[in-house]
Amino acid sequence: MTQPILGILTLYLNDAGLLEEKDIYERMTIEGKRLGIQVLVFTPQDVNYNNNRILALFYNPEAGTWKKKWTPLPELIFDRCRIQKSHRYDQLLKFRAKYNHLNFLNRPLRNKWAIHSILSKDAKLASFLPKTRYIEKVQDVHDMLRVHSLLYLKPVNGTGGRGIFRIERVRDGTLLIQGRDQSRHIIKPQRMSSNRLNDYLNGWDLKENRYIAQQGIQLKLPNGRVHDFRLLVQKDGSGKWRVTGCAGRVGAPESITANLHGGGRAVKMDQLLREWINDEQKISSIKADVDSFGVNVATYLELCYDALCELAIDIAIDRNGRIWMIEVNPKPAREVFKRAGENDVYRTAIARPLEYALWKYKQSGKSDKTFVSNKIATKKDD
Image (cartoon, rainbow, N blue to C red; front, side):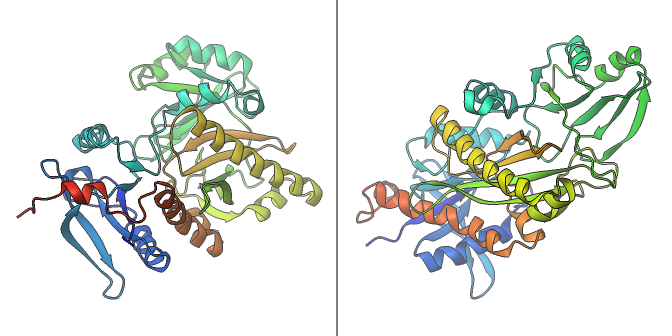
């Protein structure tokens, strides 16, 4: 029987070939060896389109080293590419278009606004969504502030807390603004009158940078830090959606987000819920609702779009125990579980995409055949 090969598709972070998440790919290689699936890593930059071969990275667990070598293009592909403003992303779009027929574990999702719009059409899910508006003009922000005393303004394609800022209408009528710039640096809190807001927002060029305004949920802990929860939902080895885990995140001092990349820390879900809710019976009910919500979101988005294998759903839980969806991340990191001390969850989070890949491989009816890409790769690169 031909050993299945999973190609992890990613992007270099710069022109020097810096690659993120190498430690995850090392762990996936080791886990893949245990399961009987070979793992390799490549980028669109490493593709020879003339003969469908790639200059792939292979990890050697025994030596603890990485090596590049030419190999046929794998049929099973795990797309881990995140949006970036670079020529490398243009190369990714070319790759996806040319090899769209291959067996991808996951397809791209749309931006924050598109995902919100599609989820709001489902009656079961709409109640979990904060009020959200696409910003066409500054007046849209003023209109939202008349209804909601707290807003978050976010770029539709932003990640890791970049470019997000928070506007709060305080009791004296002034506005308190704070946030993070595109480099994730904290913007110091500043107060201003409603009349000055236009000039401030014009500096962010909200329409050109494509922003949404979202109803804010009060999530400050007694120590003044904000918090939220990262819910990971993945396909398992039978092709079913499962909740892998949920961990809490507490933001850095003066941060408006709880992202780990922005200096936040991870804590166990139970620990954070006890600090926030402090009602064991209610906490048990909330956790069951969170699991059900996560599976429902993943199932619905896959139905509306295309193949998916994992999603991270950032959620807020207010003082009354109500669940709010902050956003969906189709290319989730797993670090939050490791940092929270959830080592079993962390290991499962690494293994499940591989188990799902094996299931897809068997379902494709090609477990006893060579890959199509092996058949067409008749020419060897220099």
